[in-house]
Length: 333
Image (cartoon, rainbow, N blue to C red):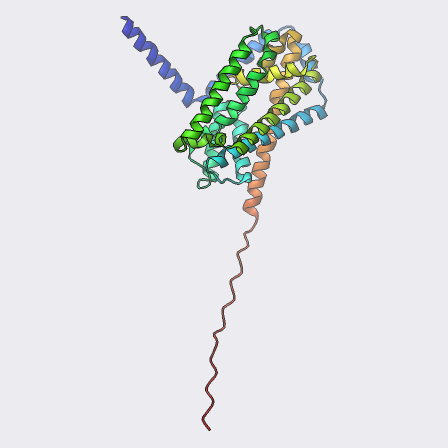
């Protein structure tokens, strides 16, 4: 087989692999999560007792606070998506937006890309006339992601110590994200039709400010949640460690890791502080995130059922007008 034949074979296999990943995202996530879980079990061999103790060290009120913080993060993230959709020409009510978001974020437990697709499909199904096309809804996620990337690049210096990242990597990352943000703003100003309507919020000073504020709020909530569970699990973590874990979760989450994301990332970033405690903290992060997503989705289900059961009162018909009868003329004298 010649060089051209080998090149064609490699391209064919890559295309087939990408097609499989797109058609079966949940199955791929389950397989990837299983592989990572097996690796974690091997890594925790001999530390099982420490892991169990660390897993049960956080009291119920701490777990409840972690769940509530995750629900607040879901609300802030959904609100930011709603701002982008509104700037793109949508007029979706906050109630319908939150319902669609609740389903998508529940699916994020298995796969982030699958969760985004569920969010878009749910919104289009419940508000087809008030929401833009799916392609626009997809690009409406980009301003939020870019702001998150910018914050991650700014605080990526927190990865220098735990991962041994060269000092100049955060500078390069920040410059790259700044260039992407600048390019997206130029595109938003020059292209106002098609899928580019999804980034229309970058043309508005007020809209851009709201996106930055909501994303910053969401990031602070997640950092606080990480710090809370790390320290209660026995990891002596600082705010910078919690920030590094958040960045690691975002990066590792791009791969089909599934529910093993929290434990795997915690061990990768903070394993030097204790493998068992770090894995326990990561497992609690995943568990409380799932509980928060379930609470959000449960509210959406109850709200939908309540609206369906509430009778719609029809407006009372307007009273019929009484015809005015002209008086009969008086008889002539």
